[in-house]
Image 1 (cartoon, rainbow, N blue to C red):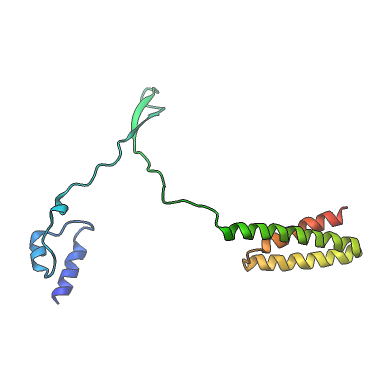
Image 2: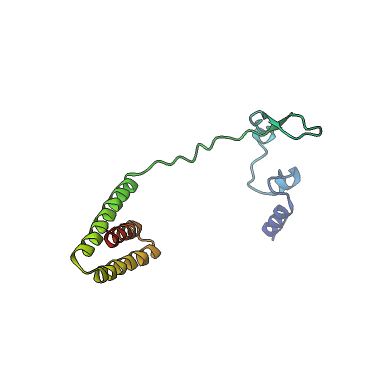
Length: 151
């Protein structure tokens, strides 16, 4: 029951607020207040002075704006697998483009159109299922179909 009471007291306390001394003594196992708890937080970087247009009399007024820290944790570099997938995808697009052009050269226009549209439908279904190389497959077929049909 005492545990439940301590939990209820912690809910009533503001988040991040320090525990008062009476409550600290009543909680067994809680270490005494250290010297680090009494330190004030470090000051942030000094504000950067910027100039804002449109003050009371339309003059330039210097205003202190908070400085923004640089996002150093976000660091994107391409991985080898990303590069390989892109290169293989481009080769797949070139292959399917050539396949579509050859289909238009070998078959009648109507037969080649049906073959290419069927393969494009397969690529669209694969894109809906979010397969990695489906975009390249479809792109190559569309470009090859347009080139084969209008050449």
